Every structure is written in C-alpha cells, then in structure tokens.
Image 1: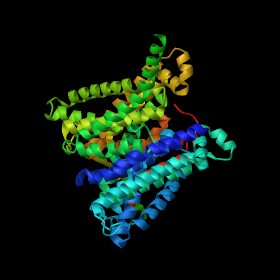
Image 2 (image 1 turned 180 degrees about the vertical axis):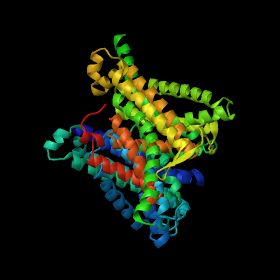
Image 3 (image 1 turned 30 degrees about the vertical axis):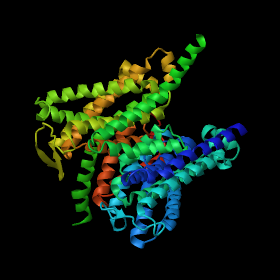
Image 4 (image 1 turned 90 degrees about the vertical axis):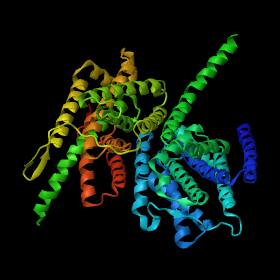
Length: 315
Length: 299
C-alpha cells in the first residue's frame, strides 16, 4: 500500500514538469495558440469530470454539457449583468454544479449503466432548449461576452490562458488528493465491492449521489473556465454533440484522471474541430473513428501483448 | 366555446395524431429494444444510420445520386441498412461479450460516422422526401383522418404484427427469446449467439428505415431530423422498460400522445425538457417498464 502511495506521489511530481512547460508556453507561441490552449485546459477539466464519473461511479454520462453550461452561464451572467468578477462567480459555479449534480443524482439514483446513459442523454438534449428559452437571463442565441478581468492591469489574453491552466492544475491536483483520501477510497470500494462498502456503512445511493455531485461540480468548473478563457458563452458551445465529444475525449484518454491524460483528452476535444474546421463534415467521422479506434485498441492491445509475451516466453 | 367543444376539437385530434406519431416512435423503440434484449447493447447509432438510409432513398430517387423509382430506391436503401448493420455488428461483436457499456459507447462512434457520411454525401441542406401515397382525407366524428395517418397505421400494424409472429412462433424467434432470457444456457443448448444478435441488428435496421421513411413526410429531411426522432424512440423504450417489446409499443404511443398534449397545451419550446422529466419520472415509478406492474409478463 505504501508503495502505491509513493507511486502516486511520484507521478504527481512528474506531472509538475508539463505544468512548468505549459506555464512558459505563452512566451514562445503566438496569441491565437495561447487562446486555443486556454480552451484546451477548460475542456480538459470537462473530460476530467466525465472520467471521474467513470472511474469512481462506473457510470457513463453523455450529458455533461448540462454542468458545463451551468458553470459557464454562472460566470457569464454574473459578469455581464452584474459586473462581478471570477472571484465570486467561480465559487458560485462550483456550488451550482455540485447541488444540481446532486439534484440530478437523486431521481436517477437507482439507474445504472445504459439506463443512466440514456437519462443523461435526455439531460444533454434539454440544455440548448433551456438556454434559448431563458433568453432574458442567458442572452439566447447571441450569448454573453465575459470581459471583467480577474486581476486588473494584466493583459487579458494572458489572464485567460493562466486562469485555464491554474484551474486545470488545481482540479487535477484535488482529484489526485481525493484518490488518497478516506472518502475517495470509500467511493472506490462502493464501486468495486458494493456489498463490502454496504457492510462498512457506505450506502450505494449515497456513493452515487456523492460521485455525481463531485462530477457535476468539476463539470461546472470546466464551464466557468470555458466562459473566461473562451470569452464568450453561447448555446452553440453546449450542444448535444459537445456532450458526446466530452465523452469521446474521456475515452481517448482511457478515462485517465492524471493531468497529462486529461490534457490529451481536452486537446482532442479542442483541436480536432479547429484543425478540421475547413471540412466540417469530416469532424464527426474523425471523432467516430478515433472513438472506435481507441475502444478497439483498448480491447485488443492486452491480447496482443499477451500473445507477444507468450511467444517470447516460449522462445 | 364550451368545455366539451374544446375537448372535441382539440383533445381528440391531438390524441389521434399523437397515436399516429407514437406508432412510429414504437417502430424505432422496437429496434432499440430488440438489440438490447439479446445483446444488452444500446444502439446509439440507430437514429443516425436510419437518417442516412432515408437520405439514400432521397438521393437515389431524386437524381442526386441516381434516378430510380421510389420502390427501387427503398429496396437499395434497405439493403444498405442491412449491410451497415452487418458491418457495425461485425466490428463490435468482440466487445459485446466483454462489456455492454463499452460496446454501447462504440455505437456512439458509429452514429458519429453515419452523421458525417450523411453530411459528406448530401450536405447540410434540408430536403423534402414524400411518400407515394394517395392523398385523401375524411372526417369521423369531427376527427380528420388523412391517407398518411392510415398508411402509417397500416404499416405499423403489419410490421409490428409480423415481428411479434416471428418472435412468438418461429424457431428464430424462440432462439431470440431464449438468448434474451439466459444467454449462457442458450449457448449450452447449441444456439449461436452471434447469428441471433445479427438477426436483431438486421431487424432493427429495417424497422429504423421504415420508421424514418414514415416520419419524414410530416416534417422535412435534414441531418438531424431522424436522429431527433429516434430520441423520442429512446424515451419510448425507456418507458417500456427497455427490455420489453410490447412495453416499447405502449411507451411509443404514450410518448406520442403526451408530447402532443404538452406542446399544444403547455409550450412547444420545452419539449426536450419535458421528455427528460417523463424519463426520470417513468424510471422512478416503473423501474422495469410500464407493463411490468400490470401483467408481469414480457415477450
């Protein structure tokens, strides 16, 4: 056990290296890349939210745009309507995400596997409709523009970049800490051995609600970062497809929770549409193919490795 | 206008047209449930693949790809749907026996590909695709019944009837039920799981094409039309318990009527939110489907 804890500690130190590299990047690359990378960090948090649900709850969500929209509009509305900066709106976004995650988890507490997946699908579909019909507060199709700086006097582009990075690092570090905590262990136990967890006093329903609440909170933080780093909040960012793309990002990173893994997932979600923007029809094809490719890779790779190992052993 | 007049002029037509659309939702839901019953996979590509085949019918009959007659175009599209179902199942079949959730996510990938292919072949434009049916309308007790309504009803009754006969009385149907009940025991008895799974996938694809062709005349055909339609089918399947064929029939009609009433009396803008509410409510009150409480039996 101590060996495992040491491994985790070592891997967290190892993940500081990419953080250092990312922190230096704005001084090397151009402004448009700084902007894209900011979005990349935000989407990585979204991928982390989906992966967290898979890892700790064993459930798949196709509806996390609900939570990202929540966080993004919390920031957007507070900023444009009341001029409140991120210092106040991020905690509010987190609070909203956690409480609505719990609010969604309660009626769906007894659903598992595909039943929950279909329910989250319905959740994702309801999001654009809600945003457009609450246009007196959300701005409808036009969306909102987030412009209040976090730290006055610093160039806005850099603020957008570093906030994204800081949020991502903070969330990834918190999740890594959570893995070592008593609560984290309890949730993992409830997922892998529900009967044992029950005997220790962790009820399945409680575990589900807790996981959904945390995942919803992370999702809302993703939305808040997306709103600030991306500077605009509009319904186009929270479509049903976006929800699927977050899941694709999570699959592509093999449901990883570490900083590097979620960065890969987030980069995938952000960069593919940008690179293929000239030929829009190829985007779903490419996403579909990579989703299938990663799933089949995850299926066949262990088998191929085993065969290779057996051959090596035999020779 | 008195209460009874309103009832007569609004409510009955709404229920009638809801039932007609509900039959189509049921066709979609039956396909989803057939696949789920035997292989425990939810086919998220159902709507997009059916949409692609509807576009194929349009493309083959309108001159965009070829100018065949409507009937020939439908046959070619059906063959394509069957071929696609074969292909999808062939690729995910190794996953099916390992994890139903993984294979379900894999079907999302196929849905994305089908959507992309539709965009690549036909673009994002909206097209009209009509059915070659006689146009007439008559009224019964103040209820306007059109040729389209009767066509949908007839096709749905024939298709669903044929499906239930196959499942109830043929060897293939018995094998399907056996595998849905207990795959391990069925395999021990010498049944081939894969061929029965394939039967379910192919049947579902055909049901999807029929449903798509029948729903398109009420609106128009775009990349998302059929996929959106299939989402109601998902709700219908969920209400029916996702593992019950008669349940999905009831669920489909229920969803059709409820959605119609909601959009007319409450608000057309919150229909997806309403659908979410129905799903959550149904799953909490009837976790195993609406028919489980009543009869306790399933086909």
